[in-house]
Image 1: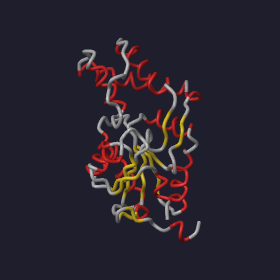
Image 2: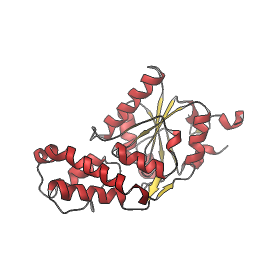
Image 3: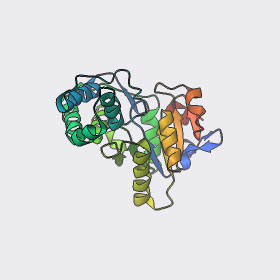
Image 4: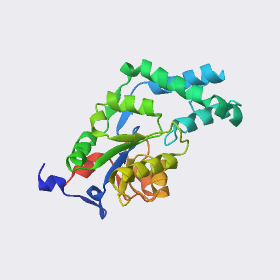
Length: 236
């Protein structure tokens, strides 16, 4: 890689290559799945563990964690918070086992520019991680299906965190544990929740419009940069 390729590219004054650790969301940021494996696993867990035959249809799940999605779907069916919490470990286990059993059916389309950006960051010696609302086993299955597993040194997921900000806090803590307390973390995500969570932990954030949210829906939350896809990071 040449010096020009390594050079940080200003995006409205934001020099995206100057961070120490980069943590990527999965769905809508790294990849988009074209299957029902994850969705069906959530449905299976609600039916088997809570005895409720429902779906996540109608739930505004973009930016939510798996725990938050399950809670919202079950709450509208009358499942109390107490029952939800008591049975949650069993439900999460069902989700993970179901996804593992059907992992060969995952169809993961990598978002534009992702392989190139990951390769550039890795070549520059940056620490790469995942910060996702998926359960850990689910998230890694998607990343493996997309052929991206080799790029990432660690991941932070929703197994024990219902709020995205707590997942991001774990990501910052892990980056600083590995690199030192002054390490600068930058998150890359496709939802307003990613921006809010990054700001909640005092981190940089690049918003990317490869999910369902458009530029104006993300830019109004004041990320450090808002781009149509990660291809823009490669320009110049």
